[in-house]
Length: 288
Ligand SMILES: Nc1ncnc2c1ncn2[C@@H]1O[C@H](COP(=O)(O)OP(=O)(O)OP(=O)(O)O)[C@@H](O)[C@H]1O
Figure 1: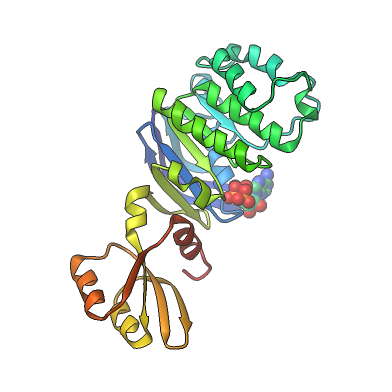
Figure 2: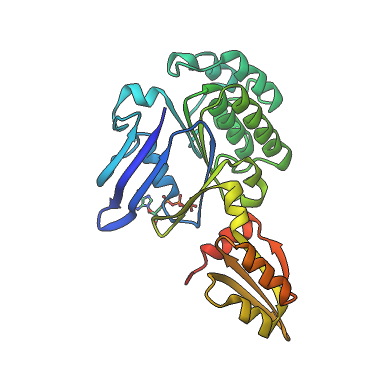
């Protein structure tokens, strides 16, 4: 399956949340969706998950609008911080009947995941702890094996070993059953190794959409004496700067040529790659 968003806008009343969103997801990869709080990640994902309709523009899944579209909805799994109040069944009971609603749901795999996440007890889902409810969402999301699987901050409350298990299972199952997986997260440094592509949203617009590998090679931190660093910085896109005495450190964004690197060496400057975590912080800082 594939996703295509064209000139997509979404407003809540007069409040425009998503503005002129354009992107394509055509390959079964893991896409990291990043953005500061309130930038519109969940809103965008809810359009993909058939929960809402765009105000204008188009979002197409396999060439069809997802909203109230039964064929598309069957193939998209959207896991989010669901309110399980009133859910009296246990995880094992719910999982038994899941394949009625989800055509690719693998009940056996779901049971093996319930075991790994220690969710096999008879306790109702509403009575589980926050982290266990999130782990249950992970189980449903993975075992659905939907061609489009969305995890919107699905790790909430899960402890470090449980999150680690989630990431391992995700990679293993993606290898066996490739699909489009979208992970919306604030745990950038912890999850960056999972992403094939990264999309950053800022103020309701797509700031960038790049393969992860390329993105990391895009930024560099350059350190040296103030005057030399300033000389190097001329004409470059500086997204962050710090100064201590005469030592200046800048983070530049954009591909650096061999000439740039040679020039930095000539000036005696130190170079270091920038993590996605820092790149994300600097790119989404106010004013950048
Ligand atoms: N039902 C609603 N009615 C009106 N405004 C809403 C509604 N839901 C969300 N919003 C607003 O839309 C904007 C985007 O919210 P959204 O939940 O999509 O952001 P987000 O990027 O997922 O944030 P976070 O990282 O904090 O989860 C926010 O300003 C929010 O207040």
